Picture 1 (cartoon, rainbow, N blue to C red):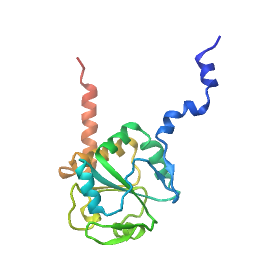
Picture 2 (cartoon, rainbow, N blue to C red):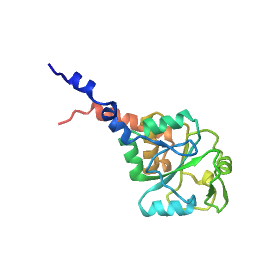
Picture 3 (cartoon, rainbow, N blue to C red):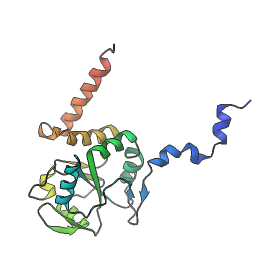
Length: 196
């Protein structure tokens, strides 16, 4: 008798793993995992903010480096989750920067430096670090005017919550830990509320 188990065993692994492959990150020449939906930018932050705003989006800068296990996890787990990547794609333009890279980045104050020097200027020393830029260009360095900063990799629910925290402009009213606590309470209330 042919069972479901027999059919699954007969399928090539590529067919079984196909959904995961749809969201798989590729590795670029610098050894960084990248998503095909990341913004390929001229790295002029003022221009990037203006173009994102015209689409109703914000800019998030993701500093990464070759060999970073947490960067790999971010791409293979967090960004492979359609709920997370879908939300980010809807509300943000993601720009990837290399912690040790040489591409020239122009800060909001007009200063242009290689990625690695801009990382130092913005006090980025660990990866991944995501800087969330303001919704419209302002004078100053991105370090000083960023709406929020994610240092290191958060668990998937908190990772998504950070993007929601910025998209909802909750940073204007509270700190991120308070936002997390508030949403845990709301989730608990929703779970305790009987449905009709």
